[in-house]
Image (cartoon, rainbow, N blue to C red; front, side):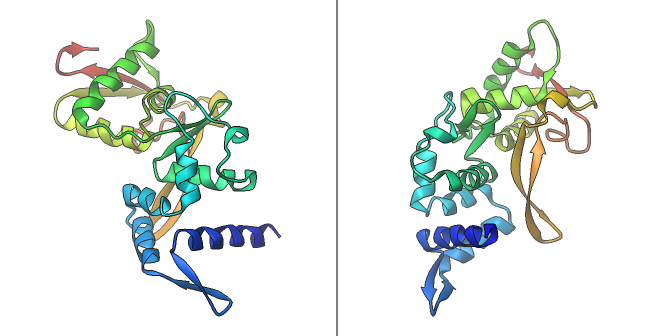
Length: 228
């Protein structure tokens, strides 16, 4: 029954976004479906969000999300409660939102250029660190999403770009996952052996900023004015 309901949900999603049309009791794909498949297989997350926004209910869902103020399941009016988990997942893999446990969903529409990202990243780091040099990477990522609307995937990309042009430097340490944050997962889209798949990634396990190196905690340095 659950499988049937899921099929019906995605069938309606495809029809609503004009990715397909009804044909002899089934569905026939339309040109937009090719654009969606290309965005998934590339993956091109900006294009993926644009494709999802062909569906009016998804656009309405995003319109209810804000930067700096979480929205809970009970506050969402644009979709039914059964579709909530699916829409949260779609918004996370397309960098449109982040669901933070015990808070709610935050819109993450912002993708600032490296020159704007660097001072924002440093300011968040300073606010979190107190007297410590290192802060939990997961806390830093979530605060950038929460208060500045920058999705963790975009944060990672902008951080690398800002480093490459000499605006900021990052140092990481720690290899023991923060177990009290086990629920702080984010759904991401990956392509392995040519096959797209989604998986949950924990922002506190330290394998996100530098996949090949443990980075549970992070320290940032302002390369334009010295140490942050």
